Structure formats: C-alpha cells, structure tokens
Image (cartoon, rainbow, N blue to C red):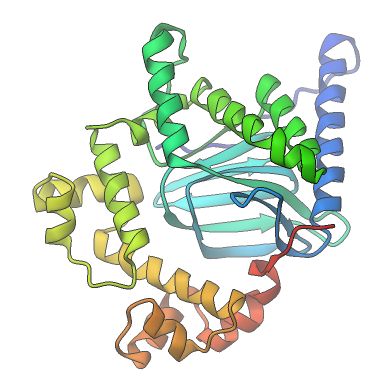
Length: 327
C-alpha cells in the first residue's frame, strides 16, 4: 500500500489552468451546498437509496478507531485522513477513498462549525461491482490504466467524468422520483469510472475470483455476517482454501491486523453502533455481538476506544447517529 498525500495546487494567475481551477472549485462548492442541504444535522443522514448516505461533522476529531463497510467515500468539504498500519490515506474535495471490504482502521477529521466536513458515502454492492469488474476485464483490458499494488483501501483523485457523475448523483438524490429512477444507474456509472481509473485494478483484485485478495474478502464477509457467532482461524482458513500460515500472512498483508484482532475490532465497533443508534445498554450490546463476559467486553472496549462504553456513547452519539432522509 502506498501513502497518499494531497496533491499541491499550482499557483496560477490566468489562462486555461486558472479557468480549470475555478471550474473545479465551483463544482466542489456546488456539491457542498447540496450535501449541506441534504444533511442539515451532524452525523449521518440517510438518502432515498438505502446504500447511500450523507456525512456531516461540525467539529474536528483527533485520530480515533472507525469501521467502514465496503464503500466509496467522497468528501466535498473538509478533510479526513485514514490510517491503516503504516499507511495514511487522505480524502477530501480532491481525493476519494475506496474501501473494498469491511475494514477497521483509524481516522481523523478536519472541520469547524463555519466550515463543516461534508461528504457522501456510497456503499459498494458486491454483486454489481463484481459483474462490472468482469465486464471491464473481458472487454478492453489494454485500455485500463496501470495500478499500484492491490489493496483493500486506497485514495485517488476525483476528476473529470467521475466528478461529473457524483454531481449528477447528488442532484438526483435531491428528488425522490429521480432518486428512484435515475440514481441507481448513476451509482453504477460511478463504480465503472473507479474500475477504469488510476487504481481500478486494486478494486478488481478484491473482486476477482481465485485471487488471494478475493479469498480474504470472502473471509472478511464471513466475519462481518457472523460476528456474533463462534469464529476460529482454522475454519476461516479452510473456508478460504488456504493453509493457516498462508491465511495469516495474506490476511495481515491486506488488513494490517491479525484475524483474531480483526474479529475483536468488528465486534466492538458493532456494539458501539448498537449502543448509539439502537439505544442498547452495554450489557445487551456485548451479548448481541457474541461476548459472554461483560467485564471482558468493557476492558477490550476501553482498550480500543480509550473510553468506557458509557463515555464513548456520550462522546460519539452525535457523530455516529443516523438521521432519516431530509425532507
């Protein structure tokens, strides 16, 4: 994985480059205005599509553990940084983040009350994305741009056709009828633009049948779907068609953590959301995600988040709550 940084904006005073900068700035401003209207409250706001929602943060947050479902995260105002192992990924109005599998990592946020972080979170529909990836590979492999080493997380530039598609998606989501009729096709186009983009092969590697990335993806989905069940590494390795040593190696290579640490993080993140969004007590949430000991849950929760379950819920309730779609 490579460390991604914010590309420098050249200092210009006129001519085509100046016009291009103005055009990009105007597009970002327009996107931010739409998201601000669709997400009037801090936290997450649902859209007319159940796999797309909006993000708003009115305050900066220091580095903290987070968990993303497979998604494309596009920030239109403000800035976030993701940390996975030794790698750092910046995503803001110039770059978007792709997470190809359920992934726990750490992130910080740059925002302020008069300049909130605003963004759109597009869930990756695995079947549709895999079908598109296969079609792209079969149709014109030579036309696909080269990529860095495949990985489950990367950030890259928002530009041209992709930026246009994001703008059209935001406009469609502003109307219930257009959201129903037009938005799904625009999401499909966004998938396509990313698959054909600078790091499209990274996403395709996670979707390709038979690759070790796809095998680890299958294991991650298994953990994601059965996090409240008994899970052991031997079974996960066998289901992935790998030896235990090979499974450990490839798992840590692409997630920057071990299978046991990943399972623990998944359960703790799920419990946090159950307490914040469903109002569960710490005890009920801990049993719901598979913990048999509430004291063990509290210890491991505080070790990961740095606060007790009650303190974490009080601190993060506004940031992680999910609001219904704006009228």
